[in-house]
Length: 333
Image 1: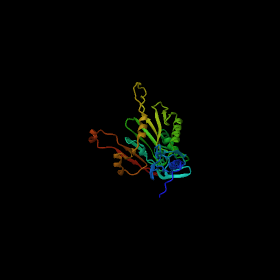
Image 2: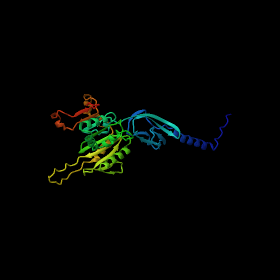
Image 3: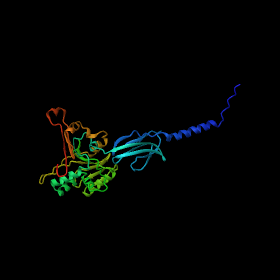
Image 4: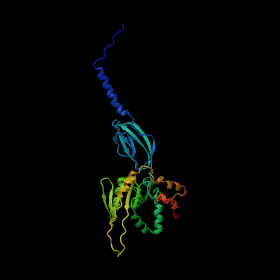
């Protein structure tokens, strides 16, 4: 005769529940955070790790670049300079996951809005700027060259980086100027390694030149020119600093009567919105620029211009745009 199964002890269900809860709690940290595959990213461009899901495990993130550790389920991080970095997700001293990222300099054209009509740029500061400055000094004289360059947007910070020592400028990235539709003015941009420090350095340069710099809560700065011109806007985005300089009305000639005109100031914030909204390759993959690349030799500085043309006028305009380069070497151009 089969024996009758014994009843479970009354404490066993409670014991099983306790073990299940403990195992589940331990399993929370056993879930591997999402770091994605090994990949290449651009300096200054934030990369996402982990998850914002309420059920995602909270871990400590080590980005491998000597920046402070962060504790969260999901984070975004940008690297200041090019290199190979190991990102680790930690639970205390225990490593849960890791991934190796290759960070490359962000090309200057990818930092220029896709609808830019004209761009003048130095693709890489190291090895190019020194020769350009030397060429310009020989062309117009050292004193005249320095005086002119010191007045150009962002150039004083760039020139200071050539003297050696610590600098916020990234020598592996670029520098340039561009024009965009709906903004009457020019925009300068410069690749940097520390956006906050670079903004502060540019602000000091502008103050030293006599301009009034008014920091804003969002980190940008309104710049009121010493000559009473229209306000400029200084801001940073993904590894580059920008200075939007609106065109000011031409002053009247001596003896010419001053007329009161209703002048609408160019919207410097439009430039910032364009830059921050840019998520793709920027102007680097402009159709005409891509078409002309193979026809222009490498150089130290480049100029591309493709003004918009109405569809009805395209047949009457044989030249769609311009792309050229200037190569500067020691004692020759």
